[in-house]
Amino acid sequence: MKARVHVMLKNGVLDPQGEAVRHALGAMGFDGVNGVRQGKVIELDLADGSTEADVTSMCDKLLANTVIESYTVETLGGEMA
Amino acid sequence: MHAAVVVFPGSNCDRDLAVAFEAAGAKVSMVWHKDTKLPSDVDIVGIPGGFSFGDYLRCGAIAANSPICHEIKAHTDRGGYALGVCNGFQVLTETGILPGVLLRNAGLKYICKTVSLKVETTQNAFTETYTAGDIIDIPIAHHDGNYFADDETIARLQGDDRVAFTYTNTPNGAKADIAGILSANKRVLGMMPHPERAADVGHGGTDGQALFRALAGVLTPA
Image 1 (cartoon, each protein chain N blue to C red):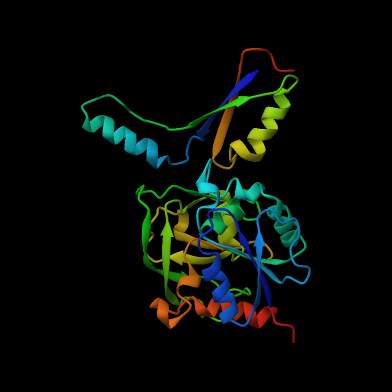
Image 2: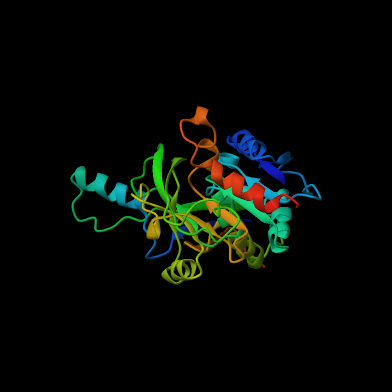
């Protein structure tokens, strides 16, 4: 069973990397990009029986810094208990 | 004063920090990140600069969950002293011992240069040898030193006299020009600039020396 964790900076937290990407896109002629936010995707290969609560705990304790980041968990193949 | 300097894989200022403590008269023990105990008579824990665990995931995040950090948390919870410099500051925020977080520099570039800091307060064991308002020159060397916390936290830090140092000309986008902050009990200091790199005439500057002398003064048993 796999889970995919998406980690994004919260709204209101400056994302200098996203801003740099937005500038680069503009310079390349891609008009109309109003904003870019860059995040992380973390794929977890989990033992059977892992629960959504386990993944939430992993996110809160390590995978995301909830001072500045929010996360969502997506289950891939199989259902989490 | 007995200082324990923590070494993580990727730490690179651990020996500099140890030398600065020793020069101020401290006995220094180096402590490995997998150690589960600090020396029993330790007065202060030094968390050095560097790139612990390659800055993977987030700067300091993996180090903050290493065995020694549970001990450091217990030490500071008991009212023990700690100094985190650069990556050490990042580790202190990731453990939750200090509030806020260090984001990527606003200009996206790694910055290595000497900057001017203003000593904002001297009401603590780290800066009491300075005079409030002093401008001191201390090197920085970081990619992620852009201090961020919500407005409420910033106001609390300022209101409680917990901002130790500010930049006179902020190089990295840090909110409220913050270069270093203190814990609520003023016994933990986290700062991005490197006082241990300005602690000997051979360094080209000695403005950081007073910080180690201040600690030695407070932590040396009478």
